[in-house]
Length: 253
Image (cartoon, rainbow, N blue to C red; front, side, top):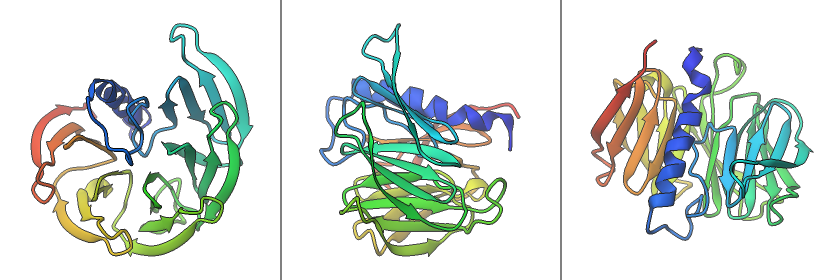
């Protein structure tokens, strides 16, 4: 994996955090809300109001960032091993690992409480959530060499008992994002897929953008940022079946 991989999600989170602060409107069921940083599905940290959450290989840490120049660590929670990603949604934290998805109640932002774990085979595992459904991508390849290439749809209407509703075969899925009824899935070196998620259990592929190498995506107000081996790309997806490339910042290999 190229050396850029670590900071690409960081770049996405930083850019979208700024965008979320400038937005005048937000959808009630979108995550994060206007007080949160908008992060990618591959991110290892998330901002919710005045709190920063970070995940290492085994630990969730909570920081008070109400005074930006003097962040304070408030709590450290043991999660288990092989933790990879974090995604906040509706007073919950969805934490991806190589073996499953952990769900934590975050109603008390300084004391996240474990609710449940959805388990799957060993596989890299980013996750995004909207409404009653979580979307999880599983892929093979180092360090997830025993994994499968799938997009899983998990019903989280009862966060104490998440239930897989359906799996969709993929090529090599990486990060993903959702906005309304449009789901975006990065297919690594194969490109970017766009699905109609009006019925989450019966996703319909609407577009497959090939010729781009994609790692993570953040859709926001009909503009999506896509990051990959080639650079940071910006697309207008006001017509989700025909996204239009707006700009690209190339990355040196």
